[in-house]
Length: 176
Length: 160
Image (cartoon, rainbow over all chains, first blue to last red; front, top):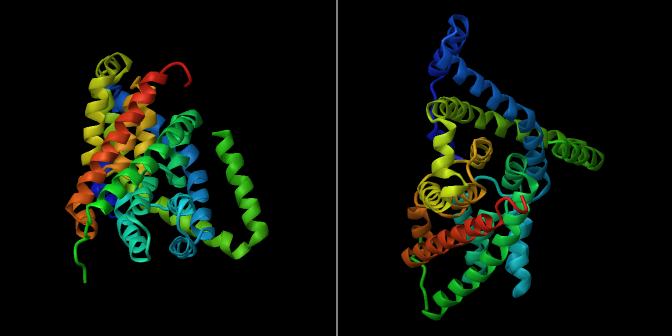
């Protein structure tokens, strides 16, 4: 969630922005009115859907325990583990960065590089909170097409790249 | 949007029946996340409303619309690869761009590269998994992004 801090808008700037919009409406300053209308429209679109999305994300966070799945993954092998990585990735929030240490934990628990790579891919393509946002703003069809197209790509490239690395006796860097 | 609310209501009811305490916790977690995302959200909305006013619709459609898909896809996947924008901000932004006439393939390239390719997270990935792993995984992810964008450019206007 560190990435959130990359968009700092000082409250004072936002207040100035609002004052600018209000004055624009009062004196009928056309560019200000247009920007204000944009802002109102976009904000309204967000306010309509965000509460529902965040309730769902909250429910997901509480009901799906990551530790159970990681444990499960360490114990299963073969094709089943590819299914488990998608189940593990599904409830994750926060994107690629927090997924990297989790992927490393998987590796430490005995998962193959093919599985680790597929997990990182699954984090990119199959997180439920992101799919909720995606389908809300881009439509269900968009999400379904994208998911159906991405999953095989992620699994196949994960297997090919993972095997190639394992074949070349790839060593991970030493860590304390 | 109707579907989203039906889904939410059903999920909340099931959760309430299963465990009241946990449901309450879920609401707290959800509102905390919403609260955290609000400041960056507002700043994006402000910048987007200004930028989209300065950039006329025709210009957006010309550069990022259907007729110029390949250029748009390349630009979108580069921007998506080198930036980190949280999903709750990316998709609303994509929705706005879509309404302005940006093509599905460009949107797909942008959102997929954001989610899969991480130039900024590369040092972390390299520290855990090594240079070769991180480099190859990111290249492969970029390739996946381009394939997905291609699929959308083939499908454009027909199935969506």
